[in-house]
Length: 159
Image (cartoon, helix red, strand yellow):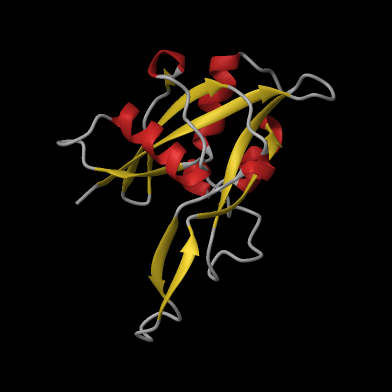
């Protein structure tokens, strides 16, 4: 069964040179600790398309994972759905700003180590960072890398 996930790709112009930057989120917990290359994501989460619209799920997940209000519906531009690892990802693009120091992620419980029966509480996101558009593919999970091309096309950025 296909899972559905929605998220917001927040972008801004770099303060140094005006090049586009994307706000990427690093998942919390011991599995992701120290993994940078292909270890980051857009702020996103799962939803049931029979019960919630993708845009509303994207806004909810942004607020939960970052601890900050999401852009309003009319500020979000729907990008093409990305299919990755048995999941359909519904990305929405918005221009905005976010101070990574203000991150306040919600907590979740996981079993760690796997199959140990021990449960630990971890933040869903342990860090966020502004990453230049041309470098974002190296940071994003491989299945999400196509999102960069959709953003590039929307912003009409040339390599």
